[in-house]
Length: 559
Image 1 (cartoon, rainbow, N blue to C red):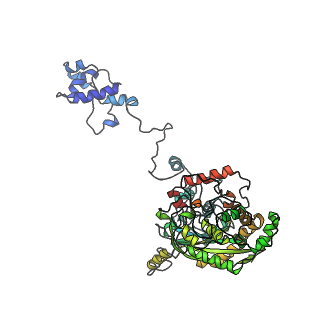
Image 2 (image 1 turned 60 degrees about the horizontal axis):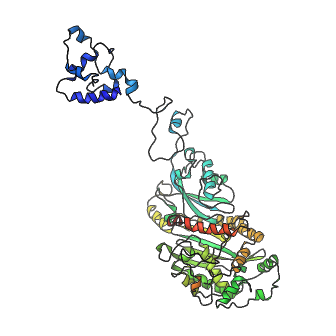
Image 3 (image 1 turned 180 degrees about the horizontal axis):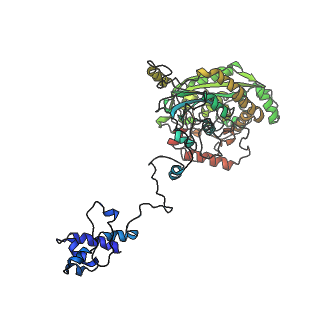
């Protein structure tokens, strides 16, 4: 309180016309010890302390010369009381000064610890933005994208740890991939495979003592993840936005095209709504009392006839061009312009037999794909197996909202992303420089590694798909779940190719007897979710998914 009052008195007294020193000097002439000026007053006009008794300030006694020579400078008062009045320079309690870090920079270590550490630091190596061309088998991985939880196994998390061990990521950045600006060209869901994908980040691309960094990184990676190449790209490179198009292939057993079993829920529902399903030879020669295992053995012996293959190819070509795919994703409306996508090419392969099962593949080449693009395959297969006309696909592009289930994730494979525009610009910039020049930017292409990629698919991806189908019968279980449904959600499948009012979904209106999807079919590993999940759990999962997937998150999840 003394100092506060003193400062107030000082301000008041400096406004008086008489000199301050003449007012306050008599009060302290015999009480204050002689001290030097405080550091705070050095280089400034000395500040005098206030008068304890204001009335005495105007009574100046006459002093002898000896008395005046013995006066202590009043500015020493501040030095004398500085332990109380002067605010400490540091707020630390340990006597160490607080080190102010750089604003806006992420970090996980205390700056003071790093500054006071006696450990020798490794020399800082320059980082460069690089594109990593990778391939992986997604079985037993929880998707592509890195997760903070160390217990969640992801492709990017495994790749990042290998980069750290190989020396491509410094120890300072080893605790967070965001420090090296990690991005990907296409995001894949849990269990989905990729023969080719691109992950970009800032890396140490010249590690001392490592002549072949790609080989060194592959040594640190498990065999189901491979690094095909590491390419220097521009610092502003963003893999997702610079990717022109992507290629996906979906593989499925040909028995999925067998029409619904007579007497099943779907068969009865379609017949009651005016769709006559022709009898099929498979069911005509079948014993209706066969157990599911025996019936599955018969399905695997099924071979696709030429007319069925022709019908499949005709239906698939309906996806070509630019269309509104709002019915092939979740929580999107016809008016949403972001639902417009362009399919550049679609091809259906000839059936191929592996083991006892005949497989068919459909290759999609599109500029981009909506979330849950597997709904495209569902519409294609269900339309063929119910003998719906190709015009039905055109109806699904229209304003009416319908429900389309997802095909099992097991059959989906990302072939590779394509960077044609980026490669063209890079070629222009490379015209006058040599490949050894630091400014040279090689083309991002998987063609140079096609032999390795084909070998990887034949050794790791295809055997995994076929092995899980052989042991689990995933596609048969999915077909059975479709055929068991007798509600209105699938009535858009009909011989007229027109969506009836009963199949139209009204947003916000709960549907009676709605189709419930099982999470079982979103998994691809052998540790598939239990088939005995309760309906209540599955309903909550579906509703929760639609609530949390806003447009921003959907855009990030789409490929």
